[in-house]
Image 1 (cartoon, rainbow, N blue to C red):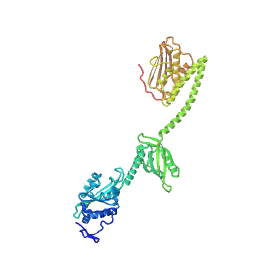
Image 2: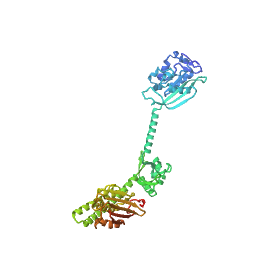
Image 3: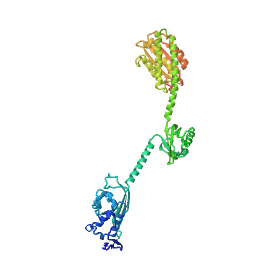
Image 4: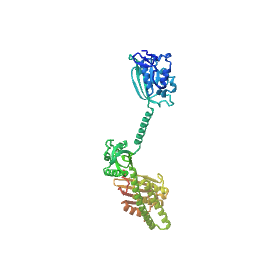
Length: 509
């Protein structure tokens, strides 16, 4: 298999093919090094005796514009081209030429050895984005290559080496990873925001919707395409949405409010929907990018505020009317200025306590137990000492609470002056119960040394005997027993009295 290179420019390679004496031809710096080197002292022997398949492989390697390598023989002696110097560094000009692979790539030997063994078994390999250490000062793992390796065979078909080509794909891979990361971040952003996002062409023909749309409406991605999204809107609002698209196609901004079905709640929620046009280089609209933002709670709050404002105006007029009534009736029932000032102050304070309870939560109503307790505590009565209260939860409407609160105030004031709270041993028991059609409140005083004197005609008796029956359709009974006053107030369980229905309570035996 040895070749003979003649001194006159041609020689025979043993196969009848003449080879130039200047072999290898060209090949840049590495070609010059191969020609200049004395190979006789190496395991390969004189280059004139190299097999033709080795010389051909080296010629192909030197002619390649990509980093290419030839590894030959049992020790896989290395040849490489000028392009490979970008990987192995300038020191590879002499130090790595003709050395075994395990010495030229000591750091990577453990990585490439299994691959070379596969090639030497006759397999051709191809790897994409293969991480490979290089001589340039880059952190490990940042240099990526697409690699191919194929076996080199002698004239008898035996594998005697391998040919490898490497194309760096680091920048391409980084670009791909960057695009994938951007796509991942964009997907996370789109899927993480609470708005429903979509894309459409003219006339509101959707071509894409975010996962939030399907999660909210129960529509699949395909069901919402074109005008399918309209089926998720409230029937009364579909024309509103289409009219907004007609205005947008005429040059206006797409902006509309309509109700969208919430599949989980099985009700429609209000959404603010807006879209921005996307234009090409000539300014023509190619599509629209839109968002639908849930404003249901905001609209409810606005409606609640409107109701509160209306209620405030009503309550303001009503309070002035009640205060004027309290003043007039207190003046008529008072004998002196001091008596007028004392009663007027107490009654306005009682009325103010009810108003404070209304302000805390207008929709919840006024808790009967809290109202009674506030009034008695205002007169220094302490529960479990001189006061006992018991009854089921009852929440009164403001109008009923105003009248009933003033009644409790009059009973308390009378108890302080003449009844149970005027003596150390006095006690007041306030109990109430709900029956199917009425609320029954019992005020019972005890520990009062007799005789108990009935209330004189005045604001208190007028309130109990006339105002409560007139305003609340109440039935009031007073009895002046040996140990103290007993007053029973019965109120109908209607929407005028209760803020919420109260469950019936058992009637004591």
